[in-house]
Length: 100
Ligand SMILES: [Ca+2]
Picture 1 (cartoon, rainbow, N blue to C red):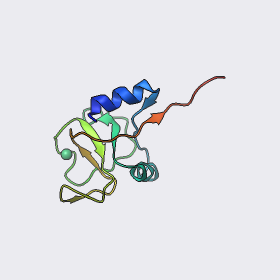
Picture 2: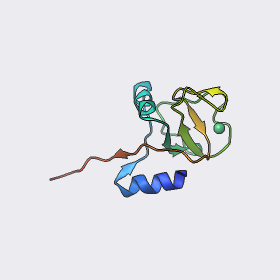
Picture 3: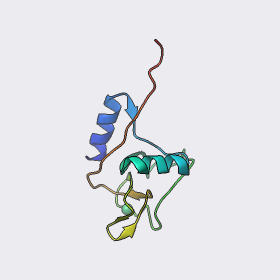
Picture 4: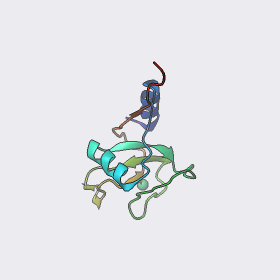
């Protein structure tokens, strides 16, 4: 799906697109599959962790994709990040339900 569709779907089920904060979390996400991430290359101020492939972000898009596949487009990814605009699967972190 497009990034806009991923954001709309995830926000609509009270969730947010993931922003990995550690290598362990990134590995967890990669284990679930490729996903859009919840930040744009134009706003990376709050990031506490990054896992770009070398030469990324390359200016393809402001949306960021975690690429779970070891090999894609002739490059090694294995969970590294790419700025891109291709249709992409997504994982959604659902916010905790507060109160009872
Ligand atoms: Ca790119």
